[in-house]
Length: 274
Length: 293
Image (cartoon, rainbow over all chains, first blue to last red; front, side, top):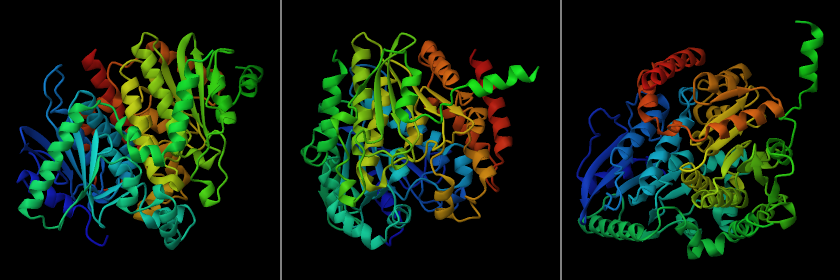
């Protein structure tokens, strides 16, 4: 957790694409490249820290206004609107600290910027593009909603440095009037509160938890292993529906989201009544 | 204008803000047309709150009414700002997603069903953290699907406002209606002050909060559609107008170039003055509309 967020994202972006600079005209914080993945040419996207970013509150790898609109642009430009053709995969490499916490961002409606990026990912998914989120580091809150959470399939490394959560621990403790120690204890009892990716995996939202050797400095064999996992996830997405029902139909969801599934079943039963 | 003609309208109006979620939803629908789905008597509650010694609520703070608005089949989903600040948990999120998906299903099968969302919410319910965040992603996915067939209208009346991940739900809606008492943003002032310091945002500066997040500003800068009085009839009439117009030509969250260019033109060396931004963006959008007309 002490490592700088975003470095791992950059490492994996380079490992999977052999590219380490942004596309022409893009801010330094968004890396986009097209690279082979099995028989496909996939589009890879990653948000990385840019210490020289125009907006001060995004310099540590947060997702801000420029990041969101760049993601939206780079995703939407590969959406193929024709019917009955094989669509290109889109891979969001996720290592995001959070959304940007800044006054400039709020004034200029970061909520709409984030919505626009999510819209682009969801539009690609609904048009039949396999959209895969590969969580290699942090996936926090609005940052994850903007970049990755609309994917058909979510993969995450099985590693102690992976954190997927609604809010980082210190802030969540302050807001819920608890100590960090309390939150850690609650995390073990209440799985959705946990900061451990193995507890997250129990919720049934992940397609797969990937066991991996040395994710900070991946060997060629490790990169090949992850490429294989991406290819498998893409094939699985192509064989499935373009909505997110897989997250509700998973074994984990049936165990951990019983109340939500009950609410859904009641709604379906009552919807067309009398 | 005599005093006699001014005072009665103000006095006799029915405040919308003072209504609870269930009454707000009812106030928008054709009388006698609606019924509540998965209501409090079904007792589907959050399983996670009691584990943390917090009393759950039998509707989990989410009210779903199915009926008609001006004759148009509509589902109204209202979040109760008075319960856990309207936050989204597993159950409230599942109710929203299920209702939106059923509206999509009906729309695909010849019975077009619109959705109206009354959002008074701080975003993810932190006591259900990851299931709340996942629920918001799923609500968004369901809106993207419904939005292909029928409009999704977000109403933010106040006084909780619409924040956190749920601000993205507002952002992808077909229309956003706000009052002057409503606020809309991703991070509230307190969160920014905590994360980035008081120099970045002084959360005790009420005037600044309204200048940045308030309904007048959001409508004025073109990121929300209509500014309304706190009047149940006026809000109901505005919702009806949106449903009558139907889907917008292009959703706001798909106008990438317009807003990306707006961001590129900002001077980021200092804080952005809300009124100046309002003027600049308003002119730009007016030009775009003329250009496309």
